[in-house]
Image 1 (cartoon, rainbow, N blue to C red):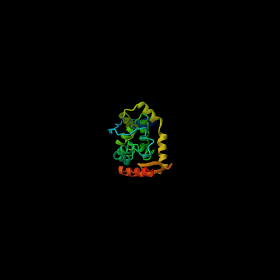
Image 2 (cartoon, rainbow, N blue to C red):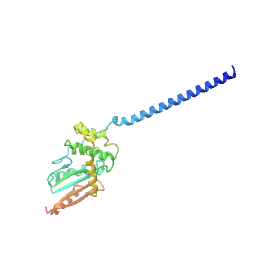
Image 3 (cartoon, rainbow, N blue to C red):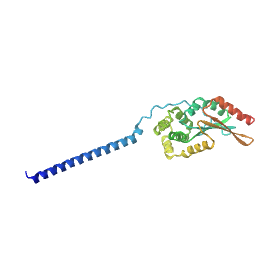
Image 4 (cartoon, rainbow, N blue to C red):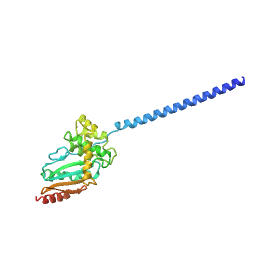
Length: 249
């Protein structure tokens, strides 16, 4: 074999080696891209496949003359406005230990009118998502039912307790019209209301949840009393009786 033939053979071998190396590099690149795409698809799809977990269904609580996010007689001498967050553990304590007694002793008797307000995204994104879900349930006359199931299933702050699929499962548990509920949530119908709740809380000087503003009239002037924290029924009784005394009742 001549020297020129040997050189040609070596060049061909080098080209073949380079071609094979490039082919392997392309194969590795394609494999990495494919794996990346599959991982991204998993991240997108998994939330819709992940089990929603157990749902705690609370008992039916009495809310006299329930109307959207309020209860009682709007002409009652005292209005109690609660500023709350569905992710707040102390708000849950108030719901579990005091709210029912307050409804029975003062709202059902016509002494107080009770209004629930969220505080927007006070704790985080799941706070406002839960608030909007409650307001959307209110469109179907089940604000308080959603309110109760939200607190009953509270598990922590922004840990998925009020992820979209969990909220949808709550809606199903309450037998809401899912088409109407989904349209309400997806359209952001109550985002402005939840944002306004937060603005109202700021304007009222609210710095912690739950907080309660008692509003009443004395000689035509609006008076207020503030109760902070998950207080007992005795604290509410004391403040309500003091307000009634201010009004001469």
